[in-house]
Length: 216
Image 1: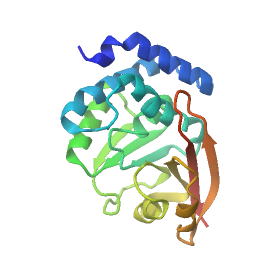
Image 2: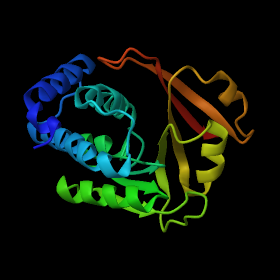
Image 3: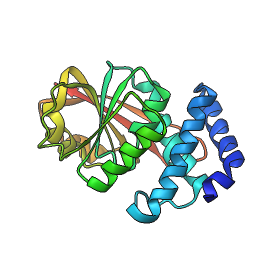
Image 4: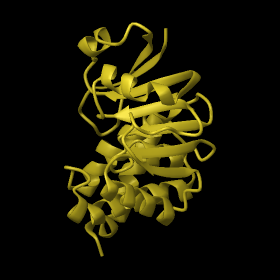
């Protein structure tokens, strides 16, 4: 049995505390899915190097709470694309927290895509689709109301690489640490920052900002 499962009560308490502080209400089934997600990351991380974070308790704050902190701000449309999803962050936590949203996880790594498909199957996430492709090369049959990234690339690169996938009136959402003044200045002229939200992530002593970008 993995360390994550052995410490399940402590991890559950840490998750519950964080959600309470953010005033995010999730049913028990959703919380159980999130903890199972961490257990899968811990298991597969031994072979696939999904994350540099090894401690399960730290994963609750660095991965789960960090991603769930943005969930209240994801209100645009019903189709979301997570670019460079990696270990499924932030796409999997959003898919668990917002089951009415269709979430596509996009990553060019075959190993990571295999992991993401296993997570979707194990967690029975019917609203998740996994695509193994480079974002600039992928041509989707539908466009997305929200395109999100977490530590994928600079804002300008993120927007340029994925703009062909954005629906009319859609929004790019980029998760950043410090306020990205210089990155914002380098955005293409046909895009503008509509909002920058400073996030407070429980149990995480680091700055977090959410940058929302739309066509100018």
